[in-house]
Length: 409
Length: 95
Image (cartoon, chains in turn red, yellow):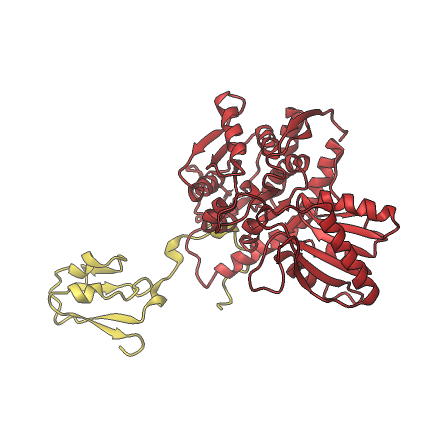
C-alpha cells in the first residue's frame, strides 16, 4: 500500500482524537464529559449535530452508563467509542471488566489525569494504572499525532478476530489534550478503508448452530451469563490468550498503517531511541518521552551513550522487546508517572524489573516516581536522572532504588 | 473437575451458551432434599404451585407427586408451604 497524501491540521490532542473517531465510521458513541477529556466528546457531538458522521450519540448520566452503553452496543456488532479520564475511568471500573469479559472491542481514549483526593485535573498515569488487570489493551501516545494515529489503529487491533478485546489509548492530560500541534491527517476515505467494516467471529449457540457472535433476534445468543467454578476459569484463560495474540496484531496493524501514513513508532509495542549502543537508558510512557529524547540528543553530543525505551503498549506487556532492548545495558531508570502506594516502586518499575530478572547481564535498575498531579518534568530533571545513571554504571552501586523526583522535601 | 467438560480452547467466547440452560443441572447445589410422604399428602398441589424451579409435578397416572432432583435446589419452600406436613427436608445423603 502506497503512502497517501495527507493534510496538516492544527489540532490539540483531544481534537486529534475526535477527528480520528470521525473518520473511523463509528456506530455508537456514549460518553460523559470530564476534564481534560471534555473536548473530545464536545467536538464529536458537533460532528453529530452537523451531520458529518452517521453515529448514534448517547448522552448519559455517568461514565458507568457510558461504558454500559458501549458494551451493549458493541455486543450487537456495532463499532463503539467513548472517552474518559481520572474519576470517570474509576467510575467505569466495574464495567471495564464486563467489556473485556464479554469480548466487546470498545475503543476508548483515556486522557490521563490524577485521581482524587486532593482533587487535581492535571496529568499523571494513576487513573489507567488502576485498570492494569482489568483485561483492556493499553496504548500510550507521545504526542497528539500519535494519539490520532493510535485511535485509528486501536479499532483494527480491538476488533481483530484473534483479539476481540477493548482497547484504551492514553494521552497525557493538558500536556497533549489542550496543546495545539500540527497533526497530519489521512483522507477520510483512506481511514475508512483502513479500519474497514467490523467483523464478528462465528460461535456455537444453544441449539448447536454456528451463529455470528452478536446479539441478534434472528440468531438468539446469550453473551456473558452466569459462569461458575466449572467454566469461569476457562473464559479467563481465553482472555489471556487473546492478550498474547494482541502483541503480534498491534505490530502488524502498526506496520500496515505506517506504510500509508509514513509514520512509525518503533515496532508498535516499544520505541527504542538511540538505544542500540547505549550504556545507560530511561524507560517511560507518554509525552515525557519527547522531553527525554531532547535530553538524550544533548547527552549524545557530549559523547555520553544515553538512550530511551518508550513503552507504547503497557498491556499486553511486550516482555521480549523489553528484554532484548535492555540486555547488556549498564544502568536503567524506570520513570513512573504513578505511585503504587506501599509497593516496591511504581507500577512500570514492577513490570520492567520483573521482565529482566532472567537476564544474566541484567542492568542495574532504579525507579523514579515523577510528575504526579501534573508536576512539571523539565529537561534538567531528566538530565539529573542520567547523571545518576552514569554514577551507578561506574560504581555498580545503587544508593536509592526508588526515588521521588521533582518533589520538595 | 469433570473430564467431559470442554477446555478453554473449545468453548465459545464470553460465556456464549452453546447448550440450553436445561442441560445445566442445578440439583447438585442442594444440601437438603425434600422427601415426600405419600400417606400424609392430600394432593393439594401447593408444592407444585410454589416450587420456584418447576421441579415438582403431579403424575395423574400414579397420583404421585414427582420431584425432579436434577433441578431441585433444596430451597425448602415446598416443605414450608405444605399444609399437610407431607414434605420433610432431609440432609442430603442422610435421607
